[in-house]
Length: 477
Ligand SMILES: Cc1cc2nc3c(=O)[nH]c(=O)nc-3n(C[C@H](O)[C@H](O)[C@H](O)COP(=O)(O)OP(=O)(O)OC[C@H]3O[C@@H](n4cnc5c(N)ncnc54)[C@H](O)[C@@H]3O)c2cc1C
Image 1 (cartoon, helix red, strand yellow):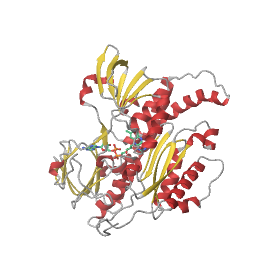
Image 2: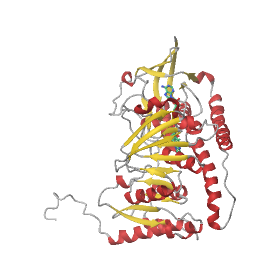
Image 3: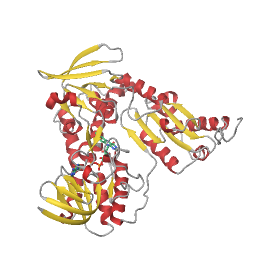
Image 4: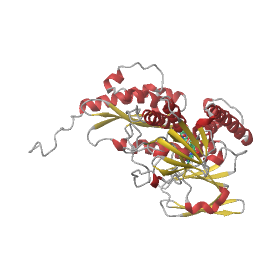
């Protein structure tokens, strides 16, 4: 058994781990990056990038067919599934290549291959070949798709995003299990590429939305195009001759039997904690088995262990993984000087069409009676109508009294850009008045934001702030 003594060991060479490694390294000392493989990061290999490549092809197909609405006839759209997937894989491999180059550039003595488990709070076992004594440790092991236990008998007909991006052609049909971010993005893309797709959701939720008005609009917009089955009470599937027989029951209880080529598991992701043997790490865990950690320092309790990325299940997004990795790496490298790092205004985007986005405080997180809302329907919004993308709704939230902009939820055209604009305003703690003082060009989708801000301003002027004191402090009120 080889023994290594290091200052910092980083477990996982994904986006969080690579950033943590570089940050820890900047403090001097010996830093070791341990990866069980494959290298290349979830983002580049099987996540953000290949999904956006598939969506780009789907959008091309959709807009070619939709051009007729402008009086432009592109002819019958023909989708060459092999060519679509060849481009997805080729471009994906290019992105992965850049990541691999970055990993290769790391000094070989700073890298180790193998699966890690804890032997103690400062000791790791890597496969059966190396014991690492690490003064500080960063856990950055990412997450994996949740594969429903009852569907395991489907074998290779139950797939996840990883297998999908390795396809060499497109299947005839796919049952997508889950209406979260991955299910919506991949389900709609496959549908637009000519695959027969049904999306099954257990609840009524659409992606990460929590505002009932936006959720309703998203359900309508997406339900107009997709076979979207929400409120599903039952989903069973068995292998049959050349695919899968799915039995499902909706809210009405009526059982339907349908044949699909494959089932895509998109029912959430689980942090990669199994196998780490965290019971030897001396950490306090929550009921999901995730270590308690401070979200500004990424330190687990008062230990010498830090956590970053999808594994902590806080905000499983790329930019959050990178930010958390930087904070965790800096604090592991600079220990015991543990500093709070920058956590930005929450921002999440679903690249379905119309896009869904959330900024700042979610509707469900707002303090009751302390906020007002402003809305805008994109149906009559000028530029959205010009582009034939006039669907969806924008809802903005502001704090009563201060007039501070708190957050937004939306489904609509160019939501990825509107969300950035709003996130920057939110992080700068701008008030609604200050936001309305900013320039707005004409005619742009952003004018819709201005309309919603004006509604917000009117609501702020109309509403009297709640009395600050508790009832007990102001008897008789
Ligand atoms: C289909 C899909 C689309 C997505 N699209 C977007 C998007 O558009 N925008 C966005 O912001 N986010 C998106 N995400 C989320 C984003 O990809 C993740 O938040 C991000 O990649 C997480 O990075 P990470 O470093 O935490 O994990 P990873 O990149 O998965 O890295 C974890 C690493 O740890 C290694 N590891 C695990 N266990 C061990 C062990 N015991 N020992 C050694 N090594 C181990 C793994 O092999 C892996 O390499 C998407 C995700 C998916 C699945």
